[in-house]
Image: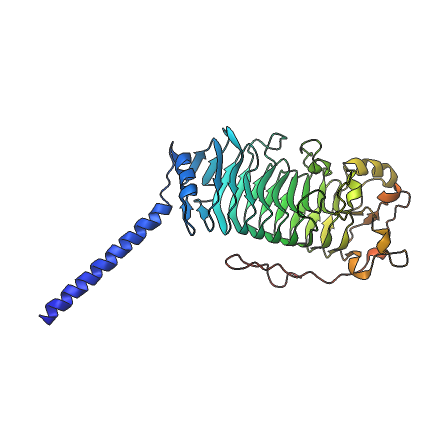
Length: 423
């Protein structure tokens, strides 16, 4: 009897375990039950609306036609495809909505898929804390055009942002853009054939590393602009990137800020502070490889009384810089070329600083200086934009200084951090 009872209990336990496993796998399949087909779009939006925190929405392989915007507002959801070139959300026939996918939820992850040919922005993430974009491609497949959407991968007013192993191609403003945000890592990604390749704007604490920016109008931009809800950007490191041949003719919308980016620019640091640009390969950008400028050089009016228009504490060092400057473009380049000749210098500074901060009327305090050193044979010019090029100087000695290296950005788990030794 005891033996029979033991066998019965064992069988019952095995049955319970099997039932539990069956229920578990059934629940797991509930998250990943989307299949390609004519009702895919409807099922996908339903899944986004019905998702519970912790859900994983798995998308099938294939080119999946979409004709309207998708949106997600549930926290802690993952959207996962079968691969960056295998699961393709195609918005080529989009009829409604300004974006491809709009997300307003915290703890959001999207990975292993592509978003193509959206009417407006491809992937917009607004006001989220905890964003991971991994192996995602956004692209306008017809090539550069003013009619393309403005932004590819586009977190704005977010915290703790990780973008990695992703790509953005063909955006009419910025391919990979993080704006008005804090605690940011953009790494091992590719930006190609956009107006601005990678842009960090009005944001604090960003690491941009091991990316490739090529065939854009401008490669990597670190901006601080007026008239935005969040200002005071700074503390950005740009390092170990490849920034080459960013010579695509500017196709930004007329009147936009990005339309002023000179065709053929590698790195632009505009009116921001505590920026470190180091250990990058920057070459063959036809206007200039590195440009450090104040907001006054844009020529735009400045009506924001709270905005600070000067660059300060900028440290450009230990980069490999070569080529470029042979076909300068843009308002200042057109005016400068007859004065300084071609090729244009590899590193340009507009020379505009806050006169009220000058020490003995000569230079900024040591912790706020523009420092440029150890960039090989790269030549330099302060083109004195504030005084209409009257005192152009190629003397690098006043800028041969160093600043305290910035600290690495650390993201909370599960997102990874910047590599040790980045300094």
